[in-house]
Image (cartoon, rainbow, N blue to C red; front, top):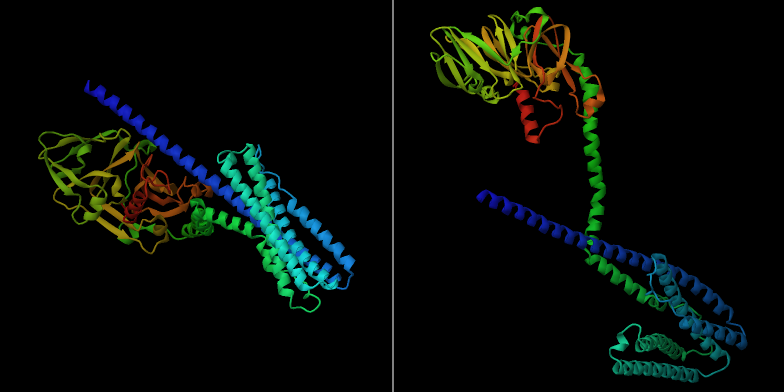
Length: 564
């Protein structure tokens, strides 16, 4: 009953956590989508407004040049010509001020091109109004000067026009206040009559504000000209006023940029875009640099190493390097699931406890912490610690087997007196030697050999006979003669006799090596009487160039440097 309740609670808790996680993911996705849409819309709006402002500036410069040329041509014209042009300008101003933009709040909503066109048309309209207004003011002054009208009369007339425009504007404001007071809710409700009347009054008020401003500017300009003698100063476009016509557009651009600055996508976009090229370069380097290094190793260092003379451990040890006997009938497999060994009096066996399957009860056993106290690091790194030491006063049959792994097999390698075997202790599970003689184990560094550097095996460990090595190998261990040259995978090599000439051979194809499916170099063994030892399916370095973790790969490389 308790297990059932526990299972039900775990089921409910797991799915409750999934439910909460899904809610968080959906809310985060909705927030991200909303931020992105706001940023996209704001970016498009700012881009449209900037395009409209730039187009209006260019359009205004063209209009200013044309207006200047027209006014200069009228400096010596008749009163009738000036009056005709002034009437034409005033008619154009009236048409531009009366022109209404089509509503943008339609169903369906207008696209980006329509919005851009509206913004450009509105900016151009404002610039045209300003240029024509300046031209009209100057023509009015010029007309007054030509007709002999007194400057004070003109100033008074312009002041009266300004007063009338201001009164009309105040009347419009009074009507809007009355309408809002009478219909406070309906005036803000789209679709109602009061809302339509208020919208019409607001549009009319905008035009009246522009007319009032133009009247004031005309009066101020005329007041400034009252000191002139006969004619006004040469006509010139007031660029500051022309820029002021685009003030609403610039204000909208500033508001849009401020909104984009508050959007977190906008805040991060610029820094990300700044470092994106560097990041892309780093990614490209991470992709190409390993391939370039592998190509250099494959096409330069590996062929160079293949042409160098091989290593000869026997020459360094100054031994004959007695070879190991091969299996009968040309067979090379020397391993089995289990082996029975006869332990003679005066001999001792050092073995991993998990490989000791059975032994007579008369044997004496005790623990030996290290294989060889002269090589503590090698013994620890190879796992040869906490060994079981057996010896017997009479002949004893001991059975050894890889009981912890069904794929492992055990081989017995008898190394006679005078024999020497270069061996990697990682494949050693035990040994049998004389009790009265110390183990003959030595290490040899080959720092001047390119073969050793390319394989990262700078140290070779040599076992000397007489000794019997108990060797493990995945799915079997084989012993073969080197002859005129044999090549095997480095990860499979367990050892070779010292009379073997050891060298490296580049792998046959580049693409498998580049993809990490094959090692750069294979071990090559030469020697008429030399033999080498290897396991059939190596687990160590099964996938060249790939490790389950960085730390594991680093550890394997260090152990390989020390010949373990």
